[in-house]
Length: 276
Image (cartoon, rainbow, N blue to C red; front, side):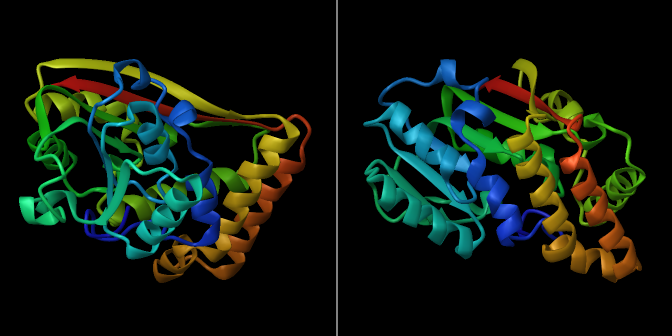
């Protein structure tokens, strides 16, 4: 997901960001949608990033076509590489903007004009107008099809032990994300946004990621400790007047959390299934 959907993409595409994006699967990130998927369906995956969820969808609905779109050339190239490695033939990745999808967006007439499922994972929190984004998704969805979205709710996150630097990180992240035109507490707003987009049959739900084992703590704590110092978050924080010393302190707070054997982190996400 890139900055054409919002003023600026808060995370960027540093390795520490893509590390978490590549960890995502249909099972751990789109479980609420899986029961709706059937062989032969066509799926449009909006803001697909490096394509790990997209490719899982392709395996599930084969021989149906799955198209992943993202406005970042860098991650589309990575998704295509992963597609080749997994030898998946029914998935395609295109650089495209959700708001500007036309027939010409797709290379040829073999691509469907409408899709059975239009899906977005962790996208709506970054866009300037999530209602318009849902409306655009609906325009590419066939009658009776599914528009599906899942987004984290940052203030819904909880962790232990209490570490002041992580509280500071939350405040900084929320501030930057909103100044970039996004809504970091998107999860709780998905139902409202779907209603405003005109959907009548909306099936809301929620789920979470839990990081509490030593391996999971190391994964989650390390990537955020790195994101704070090496991703676009660092540059954007400096631009807004936060000092490098503050960000180093915040990064070290994440490291202390991951090294605590009692460390526990819960990422809460909202979900919606909208029947067109």
